[in-house]
Amino acid sequence: MNYKEGKRLLEQKVEDFSSNRDEYLSHTFHEASARARFIDPFFIALGWDFEQTHLKINQWDVLREYSDHSTTKRPDYAFRINGELKFFVEAKAPHIHLTNKEPVFQAKRYAFSTNGKAPIVILTDFEEFRVFNALKKPDINLPLEGVLKQYDLTYEKYLANWDLLYGHFSKEAVADGSLEELKGKLTKKTKTLDREFLEEITHWREMLARNIALRNSDLTVDELNVSVQRILDRFIFIRNLEDRHIEPEGKLLSIALKKPFKGSVYSNLVPLFRKLDRDYNGLLFKKHFSENLTIDDKVLIYIIKHLSWPLSPYQFDVIEPEILGRIYEKFLGSKIRLTAGHHAKVEEKPEVRKAGGIYYTPQYIVDYIVKHTVGEKVKGKTPEEITEIKIVDPACGSGSFLLGAFEYLMNYHVDWYGKNRKKRRYKDDWYETADGDIRLSVRKKSNILQNNIFGVDIDREATEVSIMSLYLKLLDEGFDKGQAMLFMKGHILPDMSSNIKCGNSLIGSDYYDGTNLSLFDDDEAVKKVNAFDWDVEFPDIFNRSKKGNKDAKGLDHRSSENRDVDGFDCVIGNPPYGAMFEKDQITYLKNKYNWVPPIIFQDRQLL
Image (cartoon, rainbow, N blue to C red; front, side, top):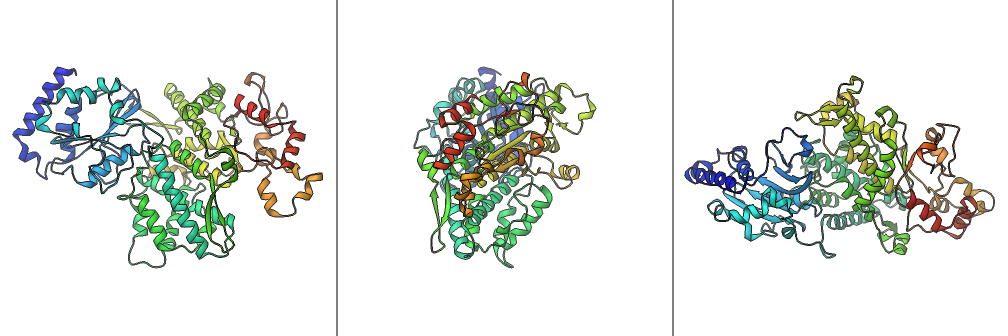
């Protein structure tokens, strides 16, 4: 629909609304009716195609939600160009005032949760049209913050401002970059979602650490770090399940605020953890010593309330797992320590201070490396052949490269099944949506994780975050929990403890041999080195063949045309640039690998 045709359509709708305004403002005229009669045509007039049924759903310009309205559901419309998200629209029934803080906050939290990718959101009931820039963290008590007044219009003004509307929100204009000036520029001072969420979870960790240390005096520093991490990870994962409509909305908050209480908030949360363990298996909800800790109610209630509607500005089904992983990457740059009086303090790790901070790999670099390693390795292969391909990141951190590899493999399988729909032996691997789109089953995604994805990191908390990030990626599209429970028999999430492991990927147990043995008279020194034997930790992978030409870690660097070996097929990732080595460790590395740091870095970059 062109400029003139769009203006004529909008003129008809304005006349309709004006002539029957009382009827449309009544409480019997619901949001769904407003969308169908007015809001859909409004954007059709702006050139957006709502009937792209000839395309796969992931190629549509407009994604609509047809579910009943709720406080935390996904936005009513997401507008895209060539698959790239551009802006959101939140629709309301005309009888709802768009100055109410709840609908405004709801709309802005979608856009804010894109982490600056699509901060523009429109709130409309057709009677009014309001545009917000949600680049900054929204505050429910400041509903007018971020409103772009130039575009704050009522239906009587639409035709007079048609050039303005068409010049910024038509498909043609958006494709030409019209929203860039509305988004504003990102500067070092701009606190986008990643920075805001990092500050919040850092604050929550400090609150939890201090309270747990105070109430549990026999806890070691390692136990304290592990406990705080596990509790926060569980809370964040549950909120992801809620926002994806996999678990009931507000479940976590309802338990925290339940009155009258029998026992503590934490004791009332433990049965939820046990249920989630039965349903999902995985790592996060397995029985854990942290469930026996004493934690003050006020601390847990504060954290859960600030993770949940209406206080939380975070919409977790919008936040990409990759973004969450980057946030955690910086979060893990500090550690909890205990003072002599058993008080908790959070401090930056020495290696982070030495490196001048945490630096994550930009997504385009991750994508490039994965495409040219994993992509080359799986090219032309069947799903059966791909199960034999083993991919590892020896310094995986929070899992950014593993997420990239997992996503690449999922997309490859979707394309392959789309071209081979008639092959019935794969019928349990995928299903077809009502729109004809191919989606991988939860079981197949789990199989990809367990068969193909492996990682090692010296930081135990990092390995837990890496597993959680992969779980969130698996659930990213959502799924039918009832159907998954039927077929997965209560094991929706795969056990990744044999895939993602904690250890020093450069130093094996032979470090303790001979002259080094005297260095390890205490457990703390052993923990610090955290030696890791690749063939012991991954025996099945290293026994796949007796042939080969692998290095000391079992990592084979020859081309795929010249390989028939045990060990990993693809090595991806970045070296731990901030790693700090003791003098004896440097001696060990030189003797074992004939190694100096620049060679290691150069080698890893070539991978």
